[in-house]
Length: 165
Image (tube, rainbow, N blue to C red; front, side):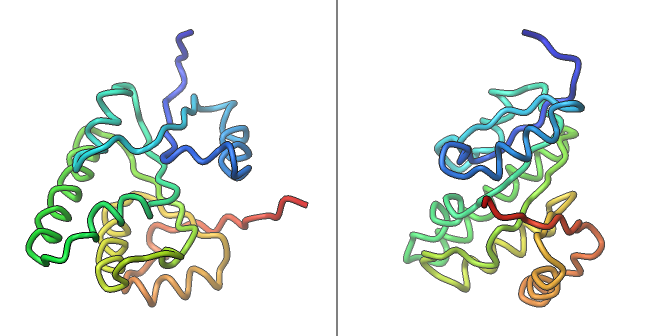
């Protein structure tokens, strides 16, 4: 089934256990075609997502903990920085293809982070590369702006996160 609507890819696909993605996808359905996918393996997950979805106009990153874990496990700082540079270059290449990057920051840091300093560096870089950031409260925007050392007001929208009662 072909659609003339712009394609938005949500990653990763947590729709089975988290109603947030389904609710957001449903709210976009009138204007966009939405698909949900997990991050492909390897250090070029964004290129692989693009190859799987060559009509993608927007990549909406939801949770990046898996990507952080891929980068952070190494004991070698050199290996970490090489892997980080490769992944950031991969995301930058996606942007150069005209794909907009939206990142919903659900957590300031991962609940099960391996190395908080490395994670913070990764998150700061993702924040800089994102075209749009979604935060769930004005308090969270203030906190993340300070923690990530980035003026989020330039690209952030506060979209309040409801509960599921």
